[in-house]
Image (cartoon, helix red, strand yellow):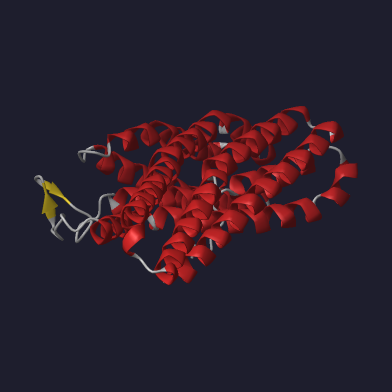
Length: 318
């Protein structure tokens, strides 16, 4: 389980936007930040679970297909293509890069939060340099991935990460620290939004669509097998088959509601509201921020509930 907080840029933005705004907002800072941190931690673990299960899920589909179709042989290759038997259909380096981005965004926020209270120029410069180097290293990972066949979509992460590296570099040179931090929030709006858009698209493409298509295949295969074999089965055997099909149907419905990309979409909405609050410095904007946190929290809770139910179904099938 990942324990870092991948989208703490928003936690930091909440804090800074409220502090640079009306002094009357200070009483409202602690509770929403605590709620946001808790939901972000849950969202991190949930998204990582779905990402890390991609290859195992494909392997389960493959073995189920073999169980229902006796004409197919267990093999490492089929029609010249590698099967999930011993090989991973999804590049784990590409998966880990996305998860690394989540973690690095957490580091980005934590470092900026630390910098905002750092009065020592030397330490400030050291911390900003360390942050810039970490982000640059992650950018290099995506550059490497973009050169690998089948992972060219990684190239689009390179530009926004480079922009954020540049923002952090300028931050280290600016002597007016409070103004520089506020400017970093505003200047970071577009690249952070771009990164969130890319993460949302990847979650839709590699997690939601893949799992929904695979679960639909499982459900169809099990149903066809039952209809073809039911006359030769005992009542107890039919009940067991039908119970399995019912579980698959329930899991399919849960997958339709377990949308990690919707959580990322809500993060982006929250991010946009937070940047706007930073620009306006008004109590009204701070109130809108709290509303988006409520919606974000609800979205994360829905994802967690669906994943927990899916886990319970998988446990009963083992």
